[in-house]
Length: 317
Image (cartoon, rainbow, N blue to C red; front, top):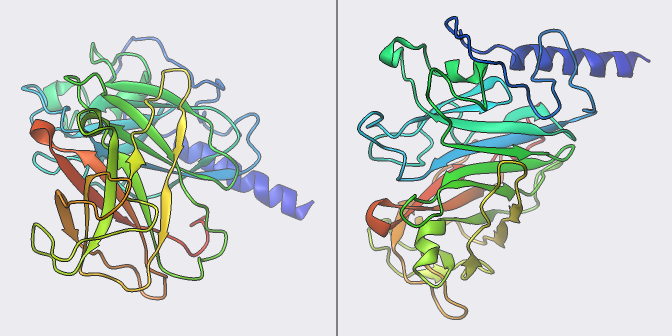
């Protein structure tokens, strides 16, 4: 009984924390509830949830920047709660914000609406601050419609990454959802988890992206070596408003930590030719070396690479 009460208390606190949505500034637009009509209402436990899951969001599209939103930053909502402001003027998809690339605990086993808006920034246009849009998500906020909307149903103790990716020009702009490996206990060794989150690039490159290691951090990287199993990863499937088709990431063992990583056009055999390369990131002391690599679309049809150091010791809640 104590265990049950403690569990209900944790979930209740989580529901309260998820209900805090920065001021709707008196908008009269209708409140749009989440798919389970819970929406994280204050003091309630979301019906149907009996566990937790982890959710990560990455801004991976070069097609968000406009005259009205030159930074390309976006605001992300889960149901009617903000996930934070992400993006950057010349670093699309880089983990610049506090919630970009980080893991957020959410109630599992039930549907959640994910809606992304052009960032309001700090009071842009007088309509509120980042996250204010969540008050009416997934509907318009003072005439500002979401860039993309989908519904995810994370599994209990599962991990999902939602990437805003693609371009309007190639009809690939939208959400792409990845099922990540779970880490109830830390992996025995170092590994790299690769994701083809570049649907626009894939549409003109034969449909695939490959990943590898570099012996130097100079671009293009020297001595490229393809990561095991990650040399030819097909493009993911775009999510719909009503549901998200998940794509499995590719996990490759890593015997030695290299100087850097790269991505390029996928090849069935041989070494992937580098296009974008990065310095190998570091991880927290005491953790195995687990890095997520997200190949994302770059401006003008190019390819970029976003690394995220994984949290592996438990689930973080």
